[in-house]
Image (cartoon, rainbow, N blue to C red; front, side):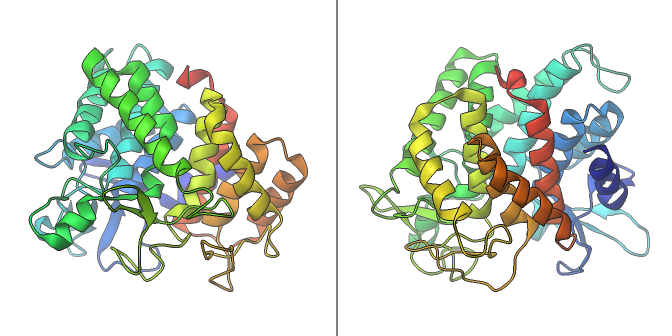
Length: 362
């Protein structure tokens, strides 16, 4: 674990005037962009779970510098290649993406326990204060008022039919149930604790409702849509691609996120879904080099390549369900794969969470 952490930190953690960030654009696919809130959430989780307070504080300074008017992290920053200034393009990057802020708030609550006395940069109580502020902002701007499920971001609205469709949708990569449990247990306001409990219950219900009719083999789609009566997989392109209703680059994280909730909570309601998901993924012809996408109805591979972002969550699911043989096969396969920010970061967060155990969420 230490060697993997050192390699990840050396490759992806960068400094700028505002603090530390996680570089995510090594292939140049996103123009002059250098990071996003998703990457920052992973970075803060990795730093706190690895007990690197100096890095954590540097990333917290960066987060505080790039909050928008809603108190949430601007989803993307760019760099001026001439001056090396890191900035947010306000027309493109000022809104938030929900999962990044959820992970950042989680890291802050954990930091209040792991570093209870604060440190040179942030005094005692600062981590818990910022965690409460951020989780309150999430409740205010990133949770559906009626359905209590995560919104896609603080930009969601009901201004017209297209926006209303997006407002009544949810992304399964935001089904971070262990975070909602932590917010419920640690937020200082009892009214907001009750709301986080409602978010946890509604989101868990949305996931469980997909089996067996919409997700017969136990894998979840990238996006769900509310049709006025129930949650259904997105039909065609909702936000990102034609595979929004299949298991693709968002839902690849659900084996990890849902298994982690089970690991820290022991909530047996999620176990049948995890078992069905495990059966499908661990016996798939492509396992452990899982395809980077699956058709929802029968788990047919959608791609002829793999990625750590698909392998690591499925391997962690095997770990949580005590399938030690397939967990070991997954770990071996991870060592064979090409490096990338997304897969490397997910792999390391999962490893840190597995090492950390469930005590921090109690």
